[in-house]
Amino acid sequence: MELWDAIRNRRSCRKFSPQPVKEEDLQKIIEAGTWAPSPANNQPWEFVILTDQETKGQLHAACLKSKEEAFQKSGWRWLGKYEIDFLLEAPMIVAVVGDPAKTGVDQFSVDGRDGYKYACAAAIQNMLLMAHSLGLAGLWYTLLDQKAVKGLLNVPDDRTVCALVCLGKSGAEPLQTPRKPMDELTRRID
Ligand SMILES: Cc1cc2nc3c(=O)[nH]c(=O)nc-3n(C[C@H](O)[C@H](O)[C@H](O)COP(=O)(O)O)c2cc1C
Image 1: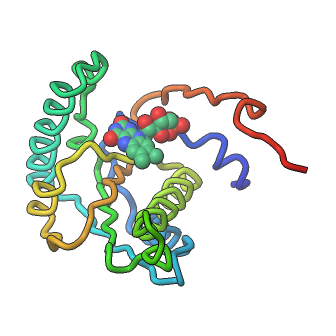
Image 2: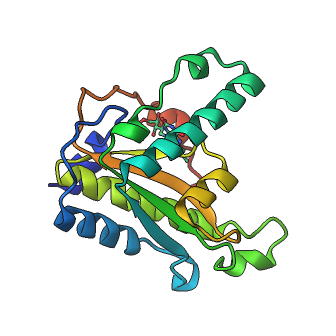
Image 3: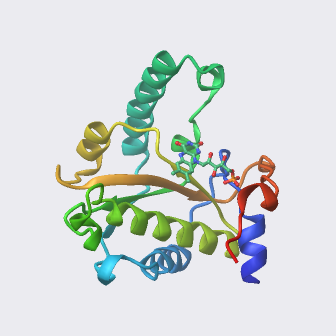
């Protein structure tokens, strides 16, 4: 697949069909993640691969609670209606776990220490693009409670779960998500 095609046509998926993700596809997706740039090449990520239905059920329950809390705090109506059954339905969820100790020279700037998160974000995007190029769909999911999710996935306290990446075959047409015109987003200093 052309790079442009992958970038342009990847969409977030919130409805998955149950076919499992092939092991060889998973390997490519994770490897794509690991080729992302990172501060001083410190590769601050780990990938926790989840297919166990019972654990997915517990994750779903924990995330429902976070979603409800976010709804109460924000009052955003869409959050009240937003369903997260994809956490149960996606045949595979990969938690991308970042290590805050592995941030870069940004740690010496006043508002630094985010380098590891940027690197994990780059890894997640690589994973989503690779999944798309393999005919799979994905979702970058973050509405979670760190403590609860770390407990369920056996992630040490000093790490950050940067995202749950849901993966599988899409079970529905994706939402079309328009982009702002480029001239609203760019300015030049020539
Ligand atoms: C940092 C980040 C966090 C996100 N968290 C969520 C999330 O918790 N739940 C969700 O459904 N989508 C989440 N998304 C996906 C966005 O909603 C989605 O990318 C955006 O609406 C654009 O749609 P598209 O990916 O189909 O182009 C997240 C995306 C990013 C980059």
